[in-house]
Image (cartoon, rainbow over all chains, first blue to last red; front, top):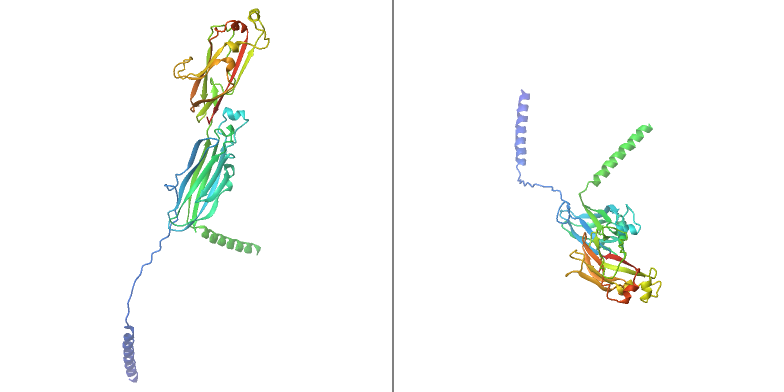
Length: 185
Length: 200
C-alpha cells in the first residue's frame, strides 16, 4: 500500500513540475519573414544597332590615293561589367581575275596585291587595335579592354591606299573577320 | 600497385579538369563582323582589242581624198577614267622620188611631204556618224606636221562600261599647188597611244 501512496505523490509532483515548465514557455515572441531572390546578371555585347551584329564593312572600287573610315558603336548592354577582346581571322588576299593592265605588269593569280598596299588604322575609342598594312592584320588585336555595364565605345576602321600604288592592285580583294568577345570582368 | 597509383593520379587529374572547366564557365558574348575591301579597275580597249595595236592603212591616196576611220574606245573597268592621248608619233617617208616629185622641186630623199599637205582632224564623235558634227568634241584640226605629241587635257570622262568614238580624218589635200605633187608615193604613219587614268 505504501507503494501506491508513493506513486500518487510522484504523479502530483510531476504534474506540478509540468505546470511550472509550461509557465516558462510562455515568453514574448515576434516573427518576421523575408524573401531572398537571386537573379543572375547579364553580359550582352552589342555591335552597331543589331544584335547579333549586322554591321560589316564592304567597300568596292577602291583606288590608289583613296582613304576613308567606317565606325560602329560597341555596347555592353548587360548588367555585368565586362572585358572586351577584339581579334582578327580569315584573312583573304585574292587576285579576283587579272585585268590587262595587271597582266602588263607581270601580275599572276591567285595572290592579290591589295593587302600589302591597304593601310589600316583600327581603333576603339582612340586605343589602337591594329595599325599597319592589311597583310599583317592577323597580328593585331586587343584583350582585357574594360567595357563596363552600360558603357559604349566607338570602334573605327580607317583605310588608305597610297597614290603611288599602281595598276597592280586592280580588282584585287582583301577580306577578314573581326571577332568581338566580351567576358565578365 | 603501379596501376592503382596511376588510376589515382588520373582521377585527381579529372577532378582538377572539372574544377578548371568550372572556372571557364563565366558569362561571355561574342559578335563577329566580316570586312571586305575590293579595288576597282580601269581597263581600256580599242575596237574591243585589249593590249594590241590597232592599225589602219590607206594606199594610193591622192588630192581630194578624205579618208577617215573611227576607233571605239571602251572602259571595261569598274571605275570612270579620264581619256588622254599620249606619244603621238608622225613618221613621214619619201618612199623614193618620182619624176613629177623632182619636177615639183622635191629634193629630199628621206623626208616625205604628205605631212605638209594633209590636214588632220581628231575628234570625239558623240553621235557616232563618223563625221564631225555639232556637239562633237574637237581635239585637233590642222596640218599633220603641226600635230602636238600629246593631248593630255581632253577632259573626257569615260564611265565604267562606257565608251567613246575617236575619229581620225585626213582632208583638204588640194590647195598646196606644186607641193601636192611633191607628196607623190610618200608615206605617212601616225601612231596614237590612248591613256585612261583615274585623275584628269
